[in-house]
Image (cartoon, rainbow, N blue to C red; front, side, top):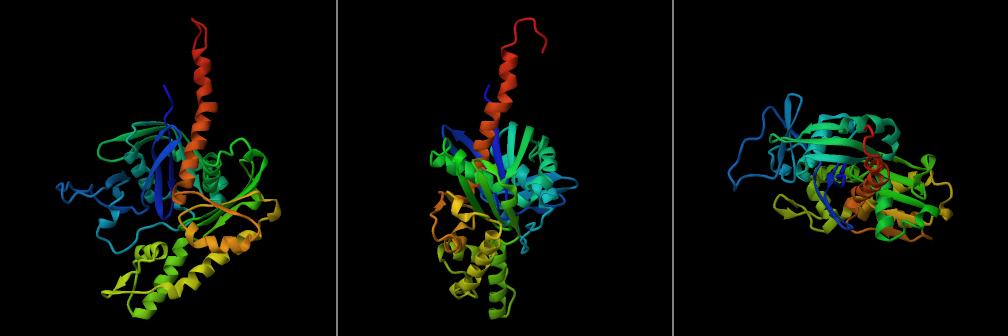
Length: 347
């Protein structure tokens, strides 16, 4: 029987997860990384009012997570924007929400991601926390046999190599993977598929900084607190301006500030890159790729900047590929050995 491998990328903005695989296709989905606590499980709603969420029990509370979590009545965006994020009940609720939506009762290998700067600090503890039986709400459990935590941009490198059919050649190349997310700006320098640790890092300078900066400017302009970060995010991505006091509000005048945040992040990253001329692949992924692209191109004018379709899912698709390879080469080996044991041998 094939081993079941799945991947989850719990980001500060969105939780991305693998729904299933078919051949080379890796199907993904996502929901906002927002977990709303309550003292009791969400009540049953009528079919017309039912929202796509699940209540995850953790400790003495229930955390509502899922695609329709924005329908929960609360004006505070309950995200966790700090380095201890993976230790919080909110993180576990989001992870278990993804497990619930995968519709698997057993997962042989679960691959999860961490910011580059936290990988060595948090890897062992996160893998331990992910392993075992998880209560995923609605009377269901999911058993995770083994877990692997990897650097988030490392997943993007695996995905890029697979899409561009470079798995056989990338082992001899040097790559820079840049991953601007909601909270962190991550980058990873790799020789082949191996991380060059001293040139790889991450720090707290992501899309959330841009959104909060613009929200503060809007607040000053309208004379009233403005907190609709989702509307600002949508405007930056699509050009659809937010509606404030029943009027379309033009935020294009704040773009220089947004671009300044991107430039600061990229400039800080360049200080870590020892030999930019040796980079054969510069790959830009992540939910903030659209906003940081201009700054990245300005920083590396002599390089082609590679992008992938659906950059939000680049990391989690790469996690899945890495997990499938690990399951095939490492986890399946003992099974093969056991299957080859002569009759009468003890197991």
